[in-house]
Length: 135
Image: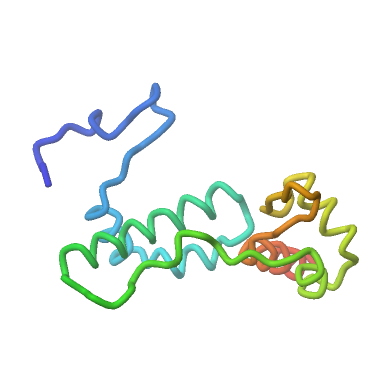
């Protein structure tokens, strides 16, 4: 912790990136309730979703490091991945539609070497929530 560090010390890349220390992420989490905020704005902007998750993970990791907690307090670093069939069931669409959404970047996923897709469960749930809200 260095309270004498100027604001410019946290700004990088011509102002395009801000580094947030874990302690500050924990303070923001306490003051703003990042989990509630993440749920409230879910699906509005994928980058916002990811930044809020990153802040929450940093806050949990910092709390664990200073609190001496032995239980796991941070989420798994690898998100829960589901198949296109599972995603299709969740969304009520055809698996081909899921593959098109993933290929187009509307669902976060990764294509395996043999061509199959794995989709981030949270991305599918965000997509479903946004679709439900629009209906």
